[in-house]
Image (cartoon, rainbow, N blue to C red; front, side, top):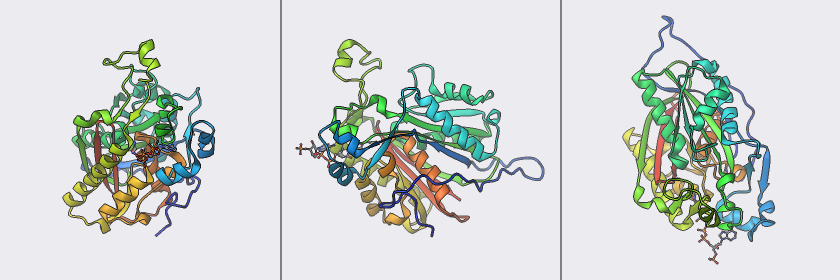
Amino acid sequence: MTPLAGSPNTPLEPPERHSTRQRTVSPSGQAARKSARIIGTGSYLPEKVLTNSDLEKMVDTSDEWITTRTGIKERRIASPEEPTSSLATEAARRAIEDAGIAAEEIQLIIMATFTGDVLMPATACLVQKNLGATRAAAFDLSAACTGFIYGLSVAKQFVLSGFYDTVLVVAAEKLSCVTDWTDRNTCVLFGDGAGAAVVSSQGEGPRIIGEYLASDGSIYELLILPGGGSLHPPTHQTVDQGLHFLKMSGREVFKHAVTCMVDGAQKLITQHNLSPQDIRLLVPHQANKRIISEVGKRLGIPAERIYVNIERYGNMSAATTSVGMDEAFRSNQFNPGDKILLVAFGGGFTWGSVLLEW
Ligand code: COA
């Protein structure tokens, strides 16, 4: 097996972009509508790197604490000229190029984010404009860190129903805009980035063979961005109170994160009559390396079959699983039949998983 790029203790540069996926149409010219495949992926990370030692100068923390408690060494921060739509557009361009299609062939853009450029319109519409995807409908989807999983699932339903052939799913976050840079409990955890996937009934690539989505709104307050909406419309007071920043009950979130991700992964493993040994690669949401290790332990999936890049990017919310999947596709050799399991959890609470077959 090819060693995993970005696995624990192997910090590597993002792998070179190379695509082995070819677009194909059946001899009759008719595409089979029986499956939804990921025919192209792409990701984009802003250039600026913020290291743990940089953070030592900003808040009362240390590289040692951050590394041992979270596994994070550095994260990317977008420039003021790069709103979320820019990150998303670049990731989407790469995914479209990888798929070997034209932007005009995209019929729907689903954008997973909670840090859109503006509250209205949907950032998906700005991405549609930037890409020149003139035939695409576009909407944003709000499922926090589980957004990419939810997005892939929605895309699959559209494709399988035959309503659309080709759907772009983009997950992008500029979390640096909603991070309180004076709060050491949260500011060390997050970063900016974007990932994208083209889901289509035509072409080659791993098939989406299963998905599981869940939510539990009763614990919504554990992870919340309280200000700016209709409950706390922006005022001087809400800004003074820092309600426009992410709030988190770290320890509680940690416990639920482990339970939810194990649940999400196990549901699909069981539903598809698989055992943990059948999972060629687990691509989990990356919020804390200790969460990932615990999930792997409970599932019985060893570290060498879990994709980890948290040391380079921190938690990029919905973008995390999409970037992880793109990098994992580029740095691994997969064989026909290999199963890849994506799993995530996040604010809501939401959680879920997607099972791919190469
Ligand atoms: N540097 C140094 N010390 C820090 C620190 C930092 N950046 N952040 C917190 N601490 C301190 C706390 O103040 C606390 O000190 P005290 O004992 O004197 O009160 C101590 O470290 C332990 O805090 P605790 O919250 O128990 O640490 P932890 O081991 O639970 O780790 C998190 C904190 C946030 C890293 C961890 O709980 C976590 O990852 N939670 C899940 C986060 C997550 O998944 N969020 C996103 C969901 S999508």
